[in-house]
Length: 159
Image (cartoon, rainbow, N blue to C red; front, side, top):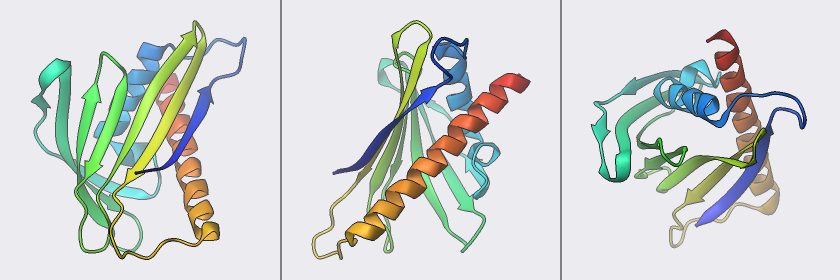
């Protein structure tokens, strides 16, 4: 079930910004080294990359966070043709299965947008977050996504 989706515009209207291809390079770098783009991640470990159908490529990734000893394994899928990134988490005793995606859209030249989508499995009998906590969770995801976009732009400026 989709529980949150939002869009971030990359760059300012009328000003030159990164191309869709360049920004995608940054997304791929984020997929392989998320700790370089989001400060709450302490480290990540990648499994072997595999080629899939339709030109997609995928790998497993273990992500370890700075606080609380939180770590989880996910599958990352990169679609270079569609400029789409998706992660899949199988779930565990503490967290339901979920997936997260980043998709690039350029409705007109020089107008680049990044769509972030969060899906989560609905677990029968699991407590439902009160609206205020659900809202705070969405705000935290948006702040994280903004930090990732800013990190990608800094990565591209150094590259």
